[in-house]
Amino acid sequence: MPTIRRAHLEDAQCIAALVTEAYTPYIARIGRKPAPMLDDYRQVVADTDSFVLTDDSEIVGVLVMSREESELLLVNIAVSPRHTGRGLGKMLMTFCEQHAQSLGCQAVRLYTHERMVENIEIYKKLGYQETHRATEEGFARVFMRKPLQVR
Image 1 (spheres, one colour):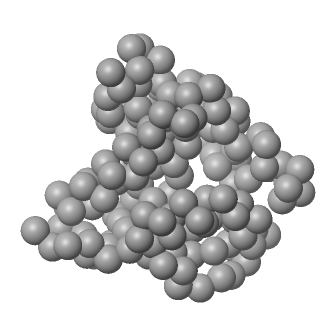
Image 2 (cartoon, one colour):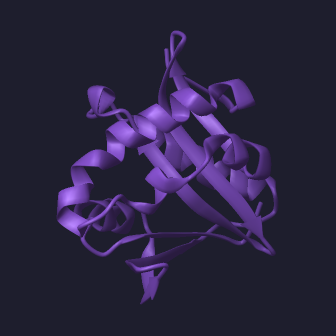
């Protein structure tokens, strides 16, 4: 049974390997390594709300979030390609929104590369709306936002 727990510094190497595995297929499409592949995951775990999705003892997903005033920024979500098609990404997205609500956030924001079109469609199906597009750090990004029900 998959479970979500807070990431620990000892998880950083496994998280980095998972992120590399999940994002490598996008390198050819966008012409360079996607931003999540450039992160130092020891620093990410130390500085953000980072969670891992485990199945038995294996880390099969990661969720990185950061609170920004009254909204939660979903910085990174990734599922191991060996474990896709099981609803794990949706489980992580639901957890993200529940975490945001528990913090009293009014919305979840995220961004993805404009060439990751399948991700944009997934986010739209989950209720996220595109707010704008911009180039940041050389990446052409699509920014999205989903208002949350205040509890």
